[in-house]
Length: 342
Image 1: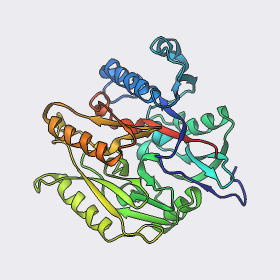
Image 2: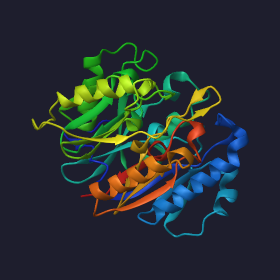
Image 3: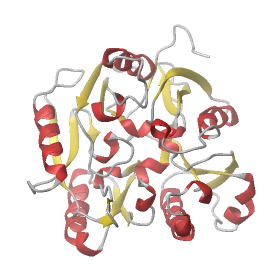
Image 4: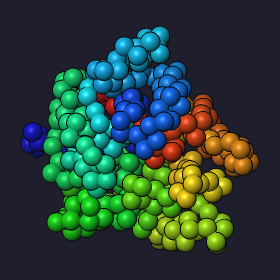
């Protein structure tokens, strides 16, 4: 149901939110189901942290509603029964947009579980529609596979993404780069797409941009960098830095680049964990920032101080980024913001 002759734009994430949406983890879909209690504790801590700043709606499967209800006693936290296969709502939920008249709508992308990596995903592909219907928000269907963690916008016409993810043949093999860019421009009302090459090593989402770079203000991009030439992320971050240094945004401004040093390499067996300070989340008046402890204490401290200097008007709220990382994502991946009606 695509509205005709109405322009809807995706606001920047730092603009005011009505609420945040999060899906409760599903044990059966987890990479490490034996970690379910630990992951649930991590989700609870993150939900409670966000609820300090704005309302949170937690999507819960019917079979778990009583258990999850027993965890929360906060009027700012609402539970909503919507069946789902997996918990990464940034990717399978709606992308909220706002019309020129201030009406909020939601883009319903096609979801295929990050290139059909995990089955089943049929319930996840329905999540966006169910959320929008529950809140009586207009639905805009997009005929393309897309995940919310694969792009960031500045709210002024510029979008950043990676070729690794959006041009991967497991998403939209029949579409060209130009056609994919056209759908982004149409459904998010952007006029400029900045294409980085690759995402971070170990990222099972095929290079989601929300681990490597994001807008923190119009014309201002933060990027996680690596200064160790022996690290797999060194070449990636240097290449992406060079792209950004040569780019301008939709308004013709040369981009201001803010580097943040990556945490030390950490593995889980033979697999590299995708630790990223860029997977933070803007909330009303604050920032929920993942930190990683142990050998990352020094980079954690540096990142916290850097965020405080960059956002003096916001509370920087560090939270344990290791609680859910083995499942493949972090705070930004599990959240989705709903902007206010203007």
